[in-house]
Image 1 (tube, rainbow, N blue to C red):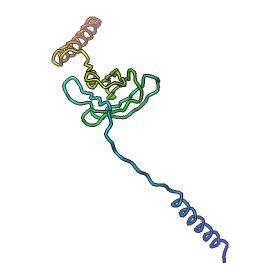
Image 2 (image 1 turned 135 degrees about the vertical axis):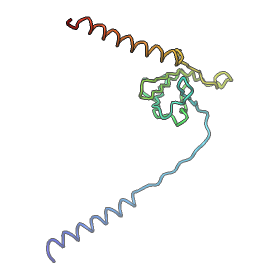
Image 3 (image 1 turned 180 degrees about the vertical axis):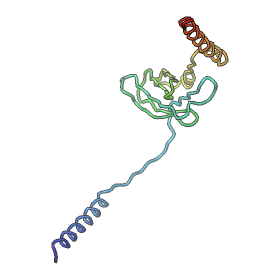
Length: 155
């Protein structure tokens, strides 16, 4: 046999033995779903639209490192299961400058008051007033710059 064909046979036998050993060493997976007492956070914009697929970071009271990270679903909801008591911090950010921060007190006793998540709302002007204020600022700046340009223009 030629040396090239010998190398080819050796290569093929090595690949076959590697494939067999990988399938022998492989392991399966299993999983299940069960009902648990978790906290469900709902994040919405001030006009009622859900903050869908926004980034979420949950921080436990015992650590500054994120306990859990993820994204809200299309309805702006995210669930987590705390493992210790204390004040948990949940931060929801949509990547466009909107940020919601919630402090959730978790204790070992399940009271009627504790089952309702604390509601946080940012105090803002209503939308029409914000639009009017924004347009006023734009026109004011344009008027200032045009006035400055006209004053400096040679006669």
